[in-house]
Length: 304
Image (cartoon, helix red, strand yellow):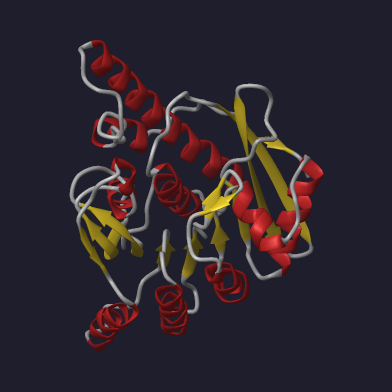
């Protein structure tokens, strides 16, 4: 794994928790492990993730994001190679993220923007509906890489996915919006007991499409999408844009983290600990070796 002498610089705008692993807590560590400098802006600062049911903390507003970006610009600290964005809870903040993307791309036209358009899952939106229009009309056309799940792809394209051909058609639609790499991080199109991820890369007039089946693990984890997007950003850069390798490595590391987390939770329950969000916090630090050297668990299947 050879990185250039000057490590890539990532600005990551995501949520942050004091305890646990979601948002920037899921993204920064693996990026650092893989040799990336990460500058993080925490869109929220919570004691823990909201899956606990109770939490305390603060939410960054659009004006405060603009102020932070102004400080970086004044000191010539906004010349980054990558931008990573995840969960955003308000339209005003997302509009300011759009302004931030434009600022950073003006400073560095070669900047790679990885956007996880977090809006919902399993047929339900958990952000305000007005965010969809901002993502579809403003953020997606500026993004180089996007990592939506099946439901989010359906929202962005207005098309229901019931087959592989539907998934490919939706990825084509997203490419036409300007995105170079589309990865559907999970879909229900896989065989029994599996999810399926799809990835497509637009090169000139051709599109290469891959799929990977992912065995389900019977727990409800939090922070997995944030971890996946960070890993994909890293491996796309390290592999010089090899999408199949980036997906195989990213999902290999992610699956190992989830297996380790699942084993830890099951062992704690056997010791009498109450099952819940605390036991299912990602075993990220314990998985450092699997982030550095991803297990070759999956095989990417070429569809086109």
